[in-house]
Image 1 (cartoon, helix red, strand yellow):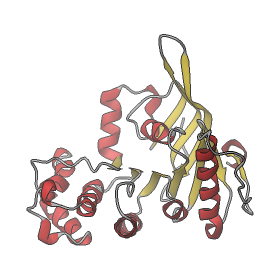
Image 2 (cartoon, helix red, strand yellow):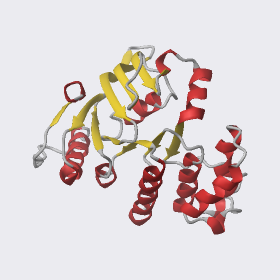
Image 3 (cartoon, rainbow, N blue to C red):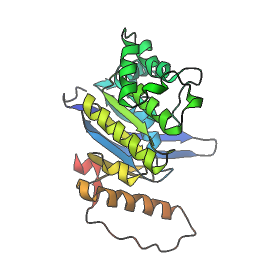
Image 4 (cartoon, helix red, strand yellow):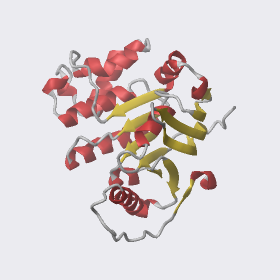
Length: 272
């Protein structure tokens, strides 16, 4: 399949199931998704709804059970791990909730690592420039254990952008941070994302963070739908979706009253 030059990610009829000794568990039901280069997209939903599973598949970390995933015109669903790894190294950046810094490397060395693995000659120069952007110049020689949680996530953001990826995947990038630090991290993420023109896809249960993206899609029990809303009411829609799913999963909460937002959700297949 040859994608439109403006489309960076195309998902068609994607599913994911896991077989156990007793039965087959359906995690993701058939879904379609198209993302245009340069867009920002939030995948929202309650814990256990399938958000991170979807992210791992579209980022090339896992394979779907069926369906197609094209990233930069590359058929990830047909590739083995070595081939997917090559696509990730060339086109993809990652930010995780747990930071995943290498404890034996300094902040500067952690940021340099992807560039060095990619054979970039100016790795240290780029890393120092990014340290300045995330306001950590004075922490360049510090190890992760010597950094606060917010500082570690800033290092992770700088590391994700050093290879200038075409698309960045962020899994709960502010999930382990307090509100003030999380807001600062989000500001940095969107600022650098806009400067580099990188496509941003993030998983979050934070309505405020999701509302900052150009689009929001809602994952509920393994099914994907798009929040067809304006940015003004995006936060309300996301809050309602996550709250409703959380209540449904909690049997001790009976007959919750949820105010209907002034926007509706519709299947992605109808909105694309």
